[in-house]
Every structure is written in structure tokens, then in C-alpha cells.
Image 1 (cartoon, rainbow, N blue to C red):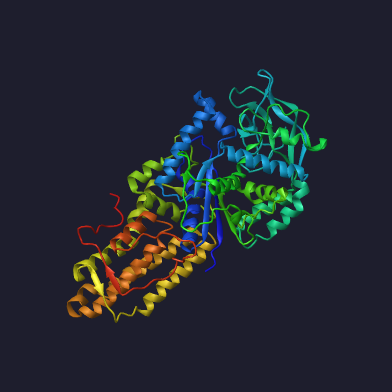
Image 2 (cartoon, helix red, strand yellow):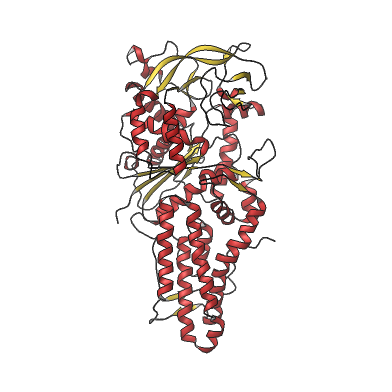
Amino acid sequence: MNPKNILIAVAWPYVNGDIHPGHLGGYLLPADITARYHRLLGNDVLMVSGSDCHGTPITIEADKKGTTPEKIIEEYHKKTLSLFSLYQLSFNVYTKTTTENHKKVVQKLFLKILENGYIVPGMMKQYYNPEKEKFLPDRYVVGQCPYCKAENQRSDQCEACGRWLAEGELINPVNKETGEPVELKDTEHYFFDLKKIAPLIKGYVKTKEKTWKDWVFAETIGWIKQGLTRRSITRDLDWGIELPIEEIEKLEDDKKLKSYEGKCIYVWFEAVIGYLSASIEWSQTKSPEEDILFKEFEGQSKNWIDWWKNKKSEHYYFMGQDNLIFHTILWPAQLIASGEKYQLPYNVVVNKFMSFNDQKFSKSRGNTIDSRDLALKYGVDEVRFYISRILPENKESNFTVSGLEDAINNELIANLGNFVYRTLYFATKSFDGKIVDEKYSISSEVEERINNTYVETASFLNRVEIGNAILAILKLSRFGNQYFNDSKIWELNKLNKEETKGIVLDLLNIVRNLSVLMEPFLPNSSKKLREFIREKSLIPIIGEDLWKMNITNKFEIVGTTRLVPLFKKVK
């Protein structure tokens, strides 16, 4: 086979709070499932992300706790690494935006776009605190949206209707911390001239009508029809990546600011560059630091260019719907404007919001649930399964504890777990766990069902339809249960041992192939099941396709003392 270079680019979560199930469903688990699937296909997968450490959410949290941004980052980045390891998220690298590597890559891309004429200086009005004589970042200013009239919206974007807000549009703006009115003051900044690059963006987006979800494509086209204008990419901040002033000063005068004091690169422009900087960091890392996740798979390329400047590579981006516009328009625009001929996003996989008990996840309002506690109480794979089943792929979904428990008991255990356990138990009790039949020929119906499941599941996963993919797998285990029942195997075993052996081998081959099909979704259970049938764990190797039907006439199963149900029932 000719393996593809697949980039799995996962949205960078702010390190200002804990990761809740909405984050897991919004982008983390879909990304991991897709990465695992492509690795089983033998593709060279690079899964990258990191903690978004700049921007006002971090400084707001630091102010709230009376500490520094550095302390907030240290606290939550460690928690994030631990949680991602617990949930078996298979990152090649999970880093953070405070690395020197990220800073250099951001500054280099900024300069390229500036040199190419797509970044221009200009004046804007920014909210200003006259008492402290300082400009206020966007999230420090709230007011009423001029379009949908929603209250308590930040000054750059309304979360209620999704509209970008220009300087001065916010109605009755106040300092979020003090409630005091703020004023607008002129300040010079750099702007990304989206109007200039709009024709290229329109051309790119039109090629994605058949690849992106219908609603993602439609929403992106809607933004374009509204008209793309220039958007500021620097701010008066004291926490962020500084401008590469020495390099800027070497350029023509029309590319310079009158003053660079207090100017930082805006987080929306900087954070998405993390996909590129993380790829470079992974490529260059030999001995990873303790505060990053790092993994290499056998046979992987160690050259980031194989993903970023390879026209045959495919880039998949995963994020929640509030980040749609940054990945369908702004990030492709940055890549095009750089002139570096970087590979553009192949599929931008955007999910809608997942609520908790029919309300938005909110730690401050007490409407949240701890992802770690869920995993420890119910099991990692059990939580992965439930979230995969209710992913908000095309409409918003709702996470409930009762829904989780019902999915475990009545789907995962009653269907998949029941089929696996009863098959292995019967084979162990009736054949001492060792079955060999040189004359064995798999039932044509069973063979067709297994093969069709690989094909059907692959077709869904190629389109990143996670919910449909896991339903296809459950359909196979449901067939296995029916096949077990219809054969009346316990009775047949008393009458015809040889015929029984053929049916048991059919059932065991279903189990064996389920252990492969399960792996992207339920990695721990896949490993456990393969241990039960004395098969090695699935270890992806570049160029080796493991995602295919595999039939054998010989099985050896662990003894009944080691054989336990894959999943525990919730009482």
C-alpha cells in the first residue's frame, strides 16, 4: 500500500479551567478516533495540539485567583496532560504555546504575511480604562450585542449570535471586572487584509462542498457573503507573543508601526499557528520535556514537511462550533497569505455544542461534571462509548449521567459485552479454550457480515461520522448474538461436536475482528479482548493495513479464571 500522511489537528484548549465532557465530545474524542483509525490503515498519522496559554481567558483566571498567568498555566496544563493520558488520547505531541519554538514559528509566519502585503498597519479604536491609563483586552469589556441584543457579550464577538463585532459596536460597554463604563481611544495596530485575499479563500472554500458537513459549508459561505474585511491581529496587551520588531524594522516604511510599545500578536491569529509549530516541535524533538505528551510510531517520518508541503497529505481539523470561522476561513487565509504553499485543511470537522442536563456546561453556575471522576467511576472506554454515541455532529446533544448508565447497561453490555463473554465462555467450557479445525470454512453469511462491517465503518470514518461508525460495529455484535441464539449451540454441542466447532469458530472470528473494529473507539477493551484470545495488542506500523477482515481456523482462549466480562454493569 501507499500510506498517506495524515495530520490530525486538534483545537488547542485554553488552560484556564478543567476539561469537561463537552470538550471530549466537541473535538478530543472524534480526533483520537480518527487518528487511531488511520493508523490501523497503515497511514503515517501526526496528531498534534497543545495548551493555548495566551489570551485574556488566562489573565482573567489569574486575576480572579490573585496569581500570575504562569501559575494558572502550570496548574491546568498538568491536569490536562493527566486527563488526556487517562482517556488514552493518542497524541504524537501535546505541547503549549509558551515554547520558544512556537514563538519563533508564529513570528516567522507573521513576517511572511507582512512581507507579502496581506498584513497592513492601520488605526483602530480600542477600549480604554482612563483610571489605569491602559487599554483593555476584548474579554475585559462586556455589553449588549447590537445585532441580537444579547447582554453580557464580549467586545469582539457575540457568543449568542456568532457575529464579529467591530470596535465601538458594543452597546453600553463596561469593564467586566469593575462594571465601570469604558471609552474608546485611537491606537495603531496591524490588520490582516482579508478583503485582499477573499477571492483565493472563496475559491478554496468552494472545493469543500462535498467534503465538509453541509451545515459547516453553509455557515462558512454565509460568512463570506457578508463580506470579508480587515481584522486586527495585534492588541495592546502585556501577555502574549511580542512582535518581531528587529525584523520588521528591516522592511519598507509602509510595513512599520510608529510605536511597538505594548503590542502583542492577537491570540486568534497566533493559536492556530500552533498546528504548524507543534508539527515542527515533534519533528525536531529527541528527548521530550516532562510537560508535553510525546509519541512516535514505528516507521514514521520525522520530517514535518512530509505533512505540510506534501500535496497528497490530508489535514483534518477538529473543534467546537465557536471555532468554525477560525478554521474554515482565517487559518486557510493565513496559510495562503504566507506564500509557503502549505497544505490547506482537507476536512474541518466541527461539532455543535454538548450540554449537560439540558444546560450549557458552566463551572461557575455549578452545571458541570468532572471528566476524571466519570472515568474512574464508570471506566474510560465506557465514557468514550457514550460520548461517541451522542456526539453533536450535526445538532446539539445532551450529556446526562442517567444516559451514560443506560448506554453502558443496555447497549455496551447487553449487546457487545454479552456477545463477547458468552462466546468466549462457551468456547472455554466446551472446548477447553483450544479450538483447531483444518477443514474449517467460515460461513458465507458470517464472512459477508464481517467484511461489510469493515467497509461500512470505514466509509463512515473516512467522512468522520463517528456516531454512525460505532452503530455499524454494534450491528455486527448484534448479529453475533442472534447467530449464537439461532444455532442453539448449547443443545447442538450435545448432539454434534464437529458441527458445533464450526459455529464456534464463526463466532470467535466475529469476536476477533470486533477487537480490531473496536480499537479506535474502545482501545482498552480492544486490548483486553485480544488478551482473552491470546492475540497481540494492535500496534500500528506505517504501511501495514490492519483494518481488514482476518479469519483463522485456530483459537486459544484464556481459562475461565481469567475470563471476565469486558464491562461492568452499573447498579
